[in-house]
Image 1 (cartoon, rainbow, N blue to C red):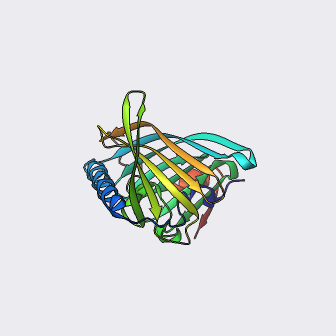
Image 2 (image 1 turned 90 degrees about the horizontal axis):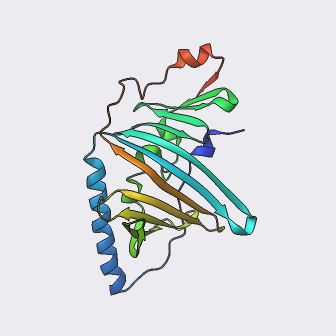
Image 3 (image 1 turned 120 degrees about the horizontal axis):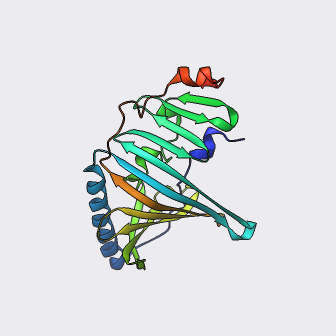
Length: 220
């Protein structure tokens, strides 16, 4: 049985000690590239991302893969993941879980401040991290530059994040998150579309539709 918490958290980590002139220079380069990514993302009216999600922990012999997609316009979003749909209309978040025939409606401030929500998934790195320039890889002809993100919060659950950025388009290609327990989570962008024609009702939750289908609606 899925819960709302199953589709919430993605990030947090132990801060690492990084110092020296070399790091300061790399940090400046990393921040400059992330600023370019942010400005590019904010220039679009809306964004559609289809992605692959993989979770692996070798010591526990765990390997899971799934996919999802999200449409973002400003703070509003429509997020499909793990068989559930999450809609934020700018005021309330509605999480629709067909497996449970349940809808949970809550205020966005119910979610923790350090949670990467769908509306923040392309800009989450703006706060709470130290940056370091990392490797560049050729991925099927695309030059992917990695930035290592280290959470400032020493109580963070995650060790680090590698953020892969397409050096030409300045779009995020993938995110590799490593936890303290050795769990590695990888999100890879399969499709990135911008400024698509959207329905005016895309981010509106139709409560009557789900009531008629027998869903149990919980408001928090």
